[in-house]
Amino acid sequence: MAENYPFPIYFILLIITITRLISTVGKTEQWKSSSSLPIELSSNKISQNLINNPKAIEKASSDYGNLVHDLPAAVFNPTTVNDIVSLIKLSFNSSVPFHIAARGQGHSTRGQAMARDGVVIDMKEFRENNKKNKNVDNIKVFEDTKVGYYVDVGGEELWIDFLYKTLEYGLAPVSYTDYLYLTIGGTLSNAGISGQTFRYGPQISSVHQLDVVTGKGEFVTCSKENNSELFHGVLGGLGQFGIITRARIALEPAPKRVKWVRLLYSDFGAFTKDQERLISMKGINKNSGLDYLEGMLLMHQGPINNWRSSFFPLSDHHRILSLVTQHRVLYCLEIAKYYDHHSENNVNKEIQVLLQGLSYIPGFYYEKNVSFVEFLNRVRSGELKLQSQGLWDVPHPWLNMFIPKSRILDFNSGVFMKIIQKRNITTGPVLVYPMNRNKWDNKMSATIPDDEDDIFYAVGFLHSSGFDNWKAFDAQNREILQYCNDAEIKYKLYLPHYSTQEEWTNHFGPKKWKTFLQRKYEFDPRMILAPGQRIFNNN
Ligand code: FAD
Image (cartoon, rainbow, N blue to C red):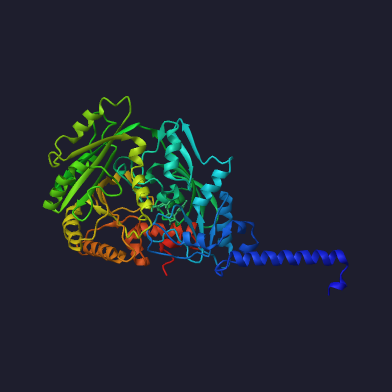
């Protein structure tokens, strides 16, 4: 056949054939395991951002929980927001759409950032790509006469980098998570809670505006005023309605230092009464009061100082331990008050006023004075220590719950005093602290107890386990949930994980579920996004 063509045409055809062959070979190699991805993807220019080498696939099919491993067909490393738009559009317009999940840091514990047979967008690579591009400034601080100071930050950025950048301007966000090596998009998809939540609300409460790429591949800017359904849906929306590519977040002048105090209790009733009192108290003047309040359990199974925080002086370990042995469980109230050189002289007096009349065990008062960053970044040193011992990447069968205030005493007697004691396996941190309902916006997707109480509690069982015994922790988690169901304690899971739609409907409650569904049909009608949450893709 070749001899029928004049030389130049034959030559051109040969080149085209070879080019096609090379590109097909390239694609075959790129998507070995990707029969689930449509062929149109291979001819799209974004295919150059797709990889499926074993290392990338392995990373995208694991998370902090180390319990779920779903293999994606490919990993997507975007260089621009437009790449994300193109990827989602392509899936949306395909005859058979493929699943897409953004993976922030993969610090979920139940595969929530995975996409079996689909595509995982590696937001860490996106962040790294941005860093290489000198023209991209992804954390920008502004001042506005109406809203005050704010930052525009990429959804792929880490809270720690965001904090350092804003501190250069003497500013900082008001609401945090205990650990800052999490992405903006990842925590805003849940809520983002910590000891500041009672006062400033969860992180989702300080967001003014978002840029989101929806499940239709549309790039939308939204706020309470514009495209408000998308805005409210995405905040706490478990990644179901769009990928957050930018968030506008409120800032306040940053304090310099922190007075950090821990007090021990043997009586849970006194402990929660004091916690509740403290979160509703104003300090010496109306802008004061505490800046942070949490609480945790100390039990005989675990060390006095756990990996998340080393606080109690070695010389006191013995007397604290004998108290733990006597009572089986101690409750540690943890508070913090920020200050700077203007308020330095007053801070001790403020703390004194706030702590007056509290019922902690006399003589079991501990304090530290640290820099603002040291306080906020307190979990990092524990992480580095565990990493150096190879104990960070172990299974984490966590259970995080919100419990109505009216049932927290029952929760203590049924769970902390019975189930936990009986099973005798809990060694890691168990957190328990209250927050104010009025700091949460019910229009957002994040879900809290329906109870009429003005206060509810966050309880976190932050277990680390071996690879051979995580099931024992999961069995304990199930027993805790069963106890709550039997006792009619109307809890909500935080960082929820369910496997049936019935459970999800119960989780949101009928009204919120209806809104959640409507938003899903509007913004991700082909059910493309965040399949690892197993809300709409539960097989
Ligand atoms: P990922 O786990 O990667 O993703 C979580 C979900 O969000 C997935 O469904 C994913 O698809 C989706 N997603 C990710 N990025 C985006 C985006 N840009 N747009 C839309 N969807 C997106 N949480 C608290 O609230 N308070 C704490 O104090 C706290 N402490 C923690 C401490 C440790 C050590 C760890 C491991 C976790 C902690 N968490 C805490 C939980 C944490 O907030 C969640 O696991 C969060 O999802 C992790 O963020 P990530 O960036 O790793 O998100």
